[in-house]
Length: 287
Image 1 (cartoon, one colour):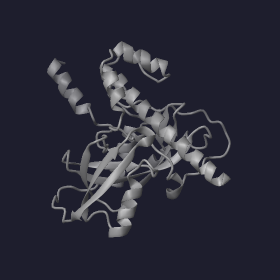
Image 2 (cartoon, one colour; image 1 turned 90 degrees about the vertical axis):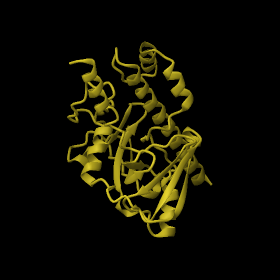
Image 3 (cartoon, helix red, strand yellow; image 1 turned 120 degrees about the horizontal axis):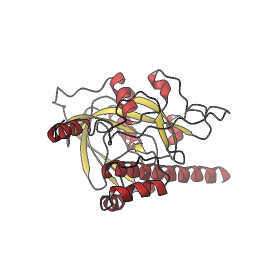
Image 4 (spheres, helix red, strand yellow; image 1 turned 45 degrees about the vertical axis):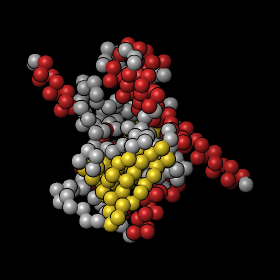
């Protein structure tokens, strides 16, 4: 296979895992149109642990037994997903976030209750701050008909397939293991017994943040870290992954290690946000 064929193959593969998920960079404004309404979104249960390097959707969503359910060492919470038209990229993308103080969803809920729908106007969304200080601005535009008749929301089946591919569990059957840019598989935890964690309600996550979205969510990575990583060699990046106890294979491309480090940065920031929120709740109870 020639060089050109390899380039075309890599270009086809790149962005296929999380490229369909919308992310917001600090200081940038993104105009979107929701293609489905607030109550037509999809709730996805995630299991995660920063220490164990796990962030994976519950496998029961995909008709499989979930090895993560019942593990008390993992946190269980919900993310919510809708289809939106991104005017910047001219494509339909997945808008997926948890409900917390560092999420655009609370503002969207308030606007939905004001207008009775999310789909009758565009919204300009921007983010400021980083990590636990991150906040979203959601500005509604004037009511206007959406004229792109070709833009259709993803089906539930298509959404689940994209989520499964973007955050694959161990032994999920993904055939892209050899692709340097493929997301890392989340290791299945050992069963520890005990009670299964309760799936949290919509209002219970208000003081929590998320990776992902993905993001961590995710395109909102720390710019300082990003610039630092770009100046490092693949070997230096690999050593940094090992120093931070991240699961990384040797002799891979620099971009492969940068993706791992960025994902860890986002997950660490989300975990810090959640701990801050839990402390606030504890203090409120004491009062």
